[in-house]
Length: 273
Ligand SMILES: Nc1ncnc2c1ncn2[C@@H]1O[C@H](COP(=O)(O)OP(=O)(O)O)[C@@H](O)[C@H]1O
Ligand SMILES: [Mg+2]
Image 1 (spheres, rainbow, N blue to C red):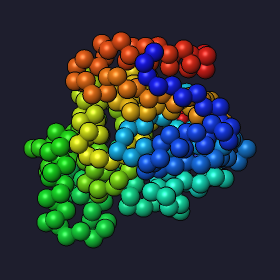
Image 2: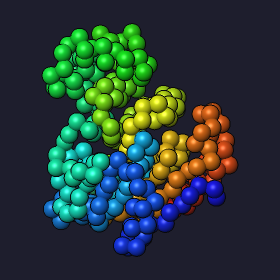
Image 3: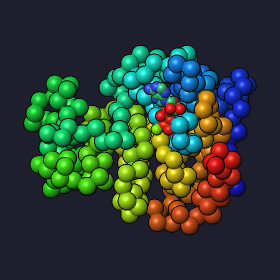
Image 4: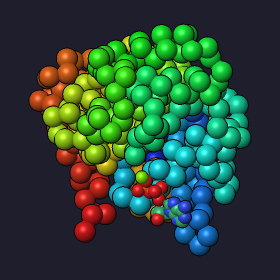
């Protein structure tokens, strides 16, 4: 096993160690708990998200991954604990964070370019400027030629790319992606994963990525946080190191990649019945 595995029983001592190991965090989650009535979704969860890297949240269904993302986005208040973005406490949604929703959340009556530019429109950016920014990201996500199509004319994979282009165009430092690839076919998904790796490499943004696919998490991540079943906290942090700079086609055959996939499955299988 060559990846760095940081076991994380959440005691004060290990939390301090983890904080000092990752000094340049774009986002810090500190002792966050979230209850929905009597349902405890998150319990005392702490996690650092290194700047410019992609961190995956991986865990059983219902363990609170979406809840954590919404709290980081400022869309939900934690019951206790705090979130910091660049050292400042999150008190609500802000332009430093952009959310790519699981269900695309596109405006059905608006064209691709208007959807992509919508975040900028809300900020009052002039039409010509926001459309030229939107065009750039439409190109980056591979949708050139579809600027004037409407969401219902696109496949699920293409709609997801529109959502991604919208999040990129507002130029948030932190991108929150909630299972963005779950509704697309396997080939499209693999292409997305490659594109995501290239975005992480070239965009210098911090990506927080929720997935339930072990292979996907290992393929795209600099850091993987394994969450326990509800009430959730982090059980393990894994940082694949050896294959991160290999070309996209050889990652899935890399021995370290295969080892880490096996090891995560060994941790998670006890929660799957
Ligand atoms: N608005 C809500 N009201 C009550 N319970 C909720 C609400 N949202 C989520 N939950 C519960 O909180 C737990 C975590 O949900 P969620 O964050 O969606 O998990 P995940 O994204 O990991 O599947 C689940 O048990 C879910 O049923
Ligand atoms: Mg979810």
